[in-house]
Length: 319
Image 1: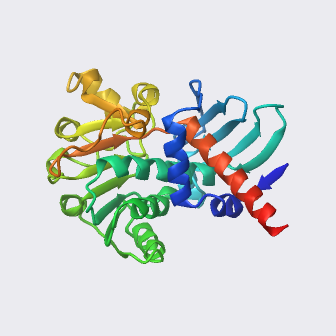
Image 2 (image 1 turned 30 degrees about the vertical axis):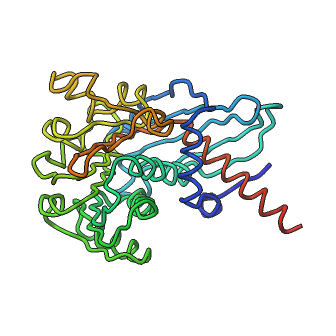
C-alpha cells in the first residue's frame, strides 16, 4: 500500500495533468453518491464541518475522502482543512493508497476552477484578482495561470499582512503579484476574480464586474455563506461544478434562488455539460460569467487515480 504525505501528494498532482484528468472524469465514467455533511460543535468557536465523500469508477477504483473544516484554526496558526483520502481497487477492494486529503482537496479544487475557466474566461485574460489568503490561494493562482496568459495578479485579504505573505509566495510562480487594500478597485480591473473565503456576507458586487469578467467562487460552501451579491448573479451567466452540489450547498446560488432573484433555469450548465460539449460556455467576449464550485467526490477520485498512476509509472521507468 502506498502512503503519501502532503509534499508527496502535491508532487504527484501536476496541475496541467490534473486539469486533464478532471476533464476526462467529467466526460463520463465516474459515479458519486451524495456526500455526507455534518456540523460539529466547537465550544466557543464557529462550528466545524465533517465531510465524507465517496466515488468510484466501476471495475477500476473506488475511494473515499474524510475532510474536516475548522474555521477557528486560523487563530491557532493551523490550516482550516485537514483530511485523508483512501483509494482502493474497484476489482478486489484492496486498499491501494492513502494520501493527504488536504493537499488533494486544494489541488483538485484549483484544477476544477481552471477547468471551468478554460470554457468560461476570455482566452486573453491577463489580470487576476485573488480574494482570500488561505491554503487555496496559491493553488488557484497557479491553476488559472496554466489555462490563461496571466501577467498580473492582485491579492486581497482581510488581513493585509497575510495578503503580503501570499503575494510573496505567488511571486515565485514568475508572475507580477501585489497585495491590494481596495477590493472594489481591484475587482474592476480583473479579467478573472477567484474567491476562496469562508465569508457569510457578499464580498464581490455585481456592479464592479467589467464586461468580459469571469467570477470564480470557490469558498462559501454552505447555504448560509456567500461571496457574491444578487447583482453579480443577475449580470452573469451562471455555471456550477455539479447541479446536485450547487442546489444543496452553494449559498451564492441558493440564496438568490430562495429570494426569487433567479430561477433554476438561470443555471446554464455544469462541468459535465461543458466537458461533454453539451454547452459551449462563454459565447461572447463581453459576457460576464460566474462559476460556483462546492466540490465533487469524482474530482477527488480523478486526482487520487492520477497520483497513484503517476507514481507507479515513475517506478516502472526506474526499473
